[in-house]
Image 1: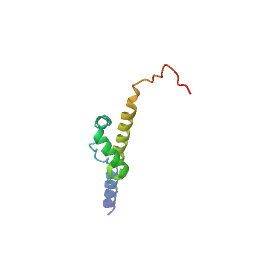
Image 2: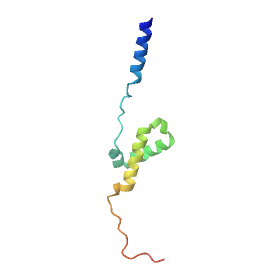
Image 3: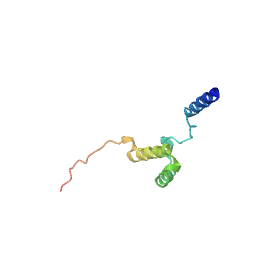
Image 4: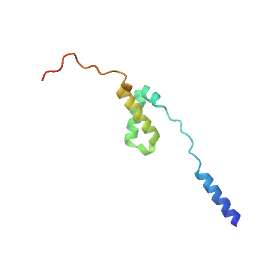
Length: 85
C-alpha cells in the first residue's frame, strides 16, 4: 500500500511537468503579409479571445502594429515651410 501511494504521487508529479503540445500558429510576418486573414483574426480575437487563444491574439496584435507602423523605416520629413496659424 505504501509503495502504491508513492507510485501514484510520482506519476502525478511527472504528469504536471509536461508542457502542452506546440500549436501550429502562423508567424507575425505571415500574418502581416496577409491583410484579409489578419482582419478576420482581429475580429475573432475581439469577440472570442478565450476560444481563439492568447498566443494567437498576441501575434495578431503584433502583426497589426507592424503593418501600421511599418517598422518605422520611413523617416519623418517635416515640411520645408512651417505651417502658419
